[in-house]
Image 1 (tube, protein in one colour):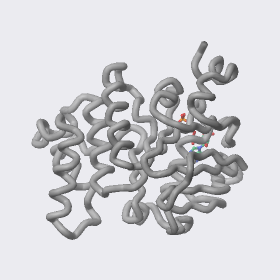
Image 2 (cartoon, helix red, strand yellow):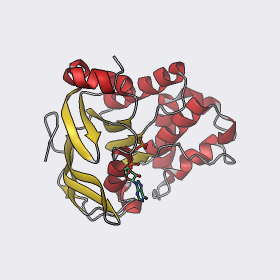
Image 3 (tube, helix red, strand yellow):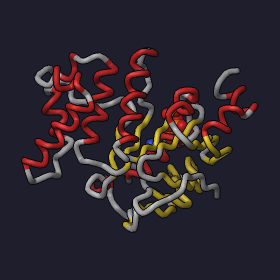
Image 4 (spheres, protein in one colour):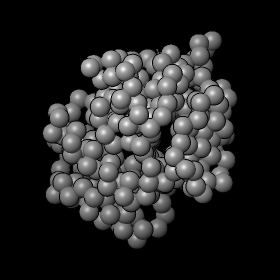
Length: 245
Ligand code: ATP
């Protein structure tokens, strides 16, 4: 089991021994990691390496065969997907999944479905609009009319409506132009400054090394390498396979 972490603290996300099977096939084997608030960790790897399955298992969206998951002193190992959000873990799925026929604001409000106090929802919406001025500008537009990058901002904004301590993001750069990728990266850096922990799954290793402090490299469901992003970016094997250098 490999553990890669910055210094853990009281509100860290900690994962040990996370394992996922689909039928008899092991897709994720014995993953361990720790993400502290305000820290960002990346998981890179090629197609089918098990990155998405790791995030889905963390969220409870696919069954976990084994594994312990905690956030601070809360044990989340048995928590179901719909309750993870209440426990402070947000999730931005691969492919964004915004509701194209609903306005930007209605999409955002869906992210606060578990809140009962309307005043708090309003405050959070204001915080999202400060983070993403473009969403305020387009708040009455149908989400389907936004560009891919704007929809990615919306998907991130919707996940933030639950005020998560940890945000899991699955391939936020997918399908975006280099300029829009820059915009998304700028947002991730802002979130770190807000002391939110980030766990970022990406095929784009260069981008990931630029925005994370630590990384796991997954191959065939297991952690093949781990370390600081700076060290991995200089590793000859990583440079050849994942950076194409
Ligand atoms: P990509 O970057 O292409 O999204 P990934 O690293 O995220 O790949 P996963 O999607 O987690 O990889 O897939 C890991 C393995 O599990 C693959 O072999 C995949 O075919 C398999 N797999 C994923 N989802 C399921 C499922 N629902 N049922 C059966 N097998 C699955």
